[in-house]
Length: 512
Image 1 (cartoon, rainbow, N blue to C red):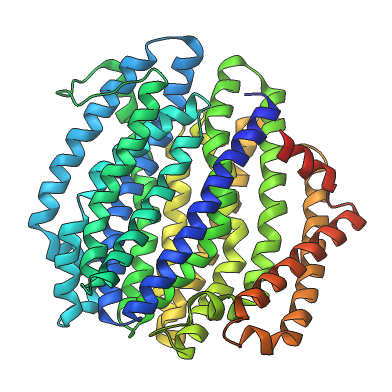
Image 2 (image 1 turned 180 degrees about the horizontal axis):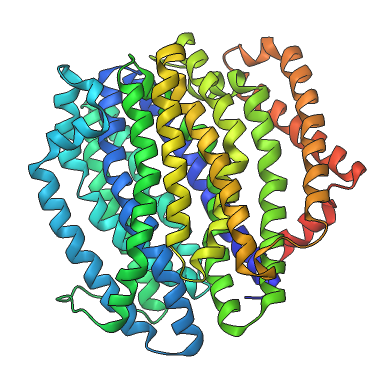
C-alpha cells in the first residue's frame, strides 16, 4: 500500500467511524435520557457488553490479528486466499454457534462473573434475561469482523467501516418506534441487538462477495493453514482475553456502587470517539499494509508507514485528550444531561472522562504499535505484555477502590494503558529498524504536545466565559459547538506557529 493509499484508507475508515460515533452519541444520549442511570440502564449496559466482550476476544482479538496478516500475504502472493478465507469463516462459525448455545445455559453465571455486585437485586435478573436475547449478536458480528478483515486486507475499507453506522441507525430506529407505540424502550432496544448483527453481517457479506470472496456456511475442515492460524490465534485470544479481563475487573468494581456502571459506560462512550476515529482507523489500515511490506521486504517503507501513522494518530489524539481533561463537565452536561440524567450523573461521568482522557494517547498508541508484532505473526509477545497490564489494572482497580471508590476502575485502566505502551515500545527494539519511528518523530510529538497544552489554556478560559450559554437550554448545543471550534482553531494556529505540523499536510491528506 503506497503512503497516499495508506492515508486515504485511514481517512475512509476515520470518516465512517466518526459518523458511527456521532450516531452512537445520539443513541446513547437518547437511551440514558429515557431510562436514566438506574437498574434498567445498567442491566442493558451489562447485557450488551457481554457479547461485545466475547467478540473482541474471539473475532477482533484473536482471529483478525492472526487472520489478516496471513490472508494479506496470500493475497500478495496469489496463493489460495479465497479457500483460506472460506476455511476460516467456517471454523469461526462453528466455534461461535457452540459458544452461543452454551452461553444460554450458563447465562446467570456469566452475568455474575462480570457484574457480581448486581447479585440479589432486581437488575441481576433483568441483565440475565437481556443477555440471553443479546448474546447471539456475537455470532453475526464476529463473522462480520472476519469479512471486514478480508475487505480491509484487499484495500476495501468503506463497507466494513460503515457497518457500525448501520448498527446505530437500527438502535435509534428501535428507540423511536418504542416511543411512538408507547412500548418498552428497553425491550425494543435489546431485541434490536441481534437484528443489527444480522444486518451488519449481510452488509459486509455482500461487499466481500462483490470483491470476489463469496464465503458460505460449510462443514469446517482442519487444513494446514487453519492449524497454523489456530496456533497463531491462541496467544492472541489470550491477549484479547487479558484486555477483556481488565474491562471485567473495572465493571466488577463499579457494580458494587450504585449507578457507577452507567457512569463508567457513558464516560467510555465519550473517550471512545477519538479512540475509534483515530486509533482503530490507524490499526485497521496499518496492519495489512505492514504485512504486505514485510512480504515484499520493504523495510524503509514499513518505517515510513509506522512513523506517518504515529504522527497522524497523536496529532489528532493529544489535543482530544487535553480537551477531555480540561472541559469534561461541559462535554458531558450538553451531551448527556437531559431527561432522567441528573447533575450528579454529569459530575460523576465527567470525573471518569478526565481520567480516561489522560490515558487516551496510550490507548491509541497501542493500536499503532501492536501491528508491528501482528504483521510478523507474533502474537505471543503482545500477550505477555497484556498479562503485565492485567496485573497492574487488577491491583490498582481493587486496591484503590477501598480508598477512592468506583473511580479506581478508570485510574487503573489509564495506568495499565501506559504500561502496555512502554512494553510495546521496548519490545519493538528487537524487531529491526523498520519497527522504530524515524528520526524527528520525538521532536514533532513534543511540539504537538506544546500546541495541545496551549489549546487547553484557551479552552479553559473560553469555557469559563461561556458557562451561561453552556447551561442554557436551546443554545447549549451551539455554545458547545463554538467551544469545540475555538479549541480546534487555537490548536491549528499554535501548532502552525511553533512548527508542530503544517496545515497543508492535513489538506493534502484530505485531498488524497
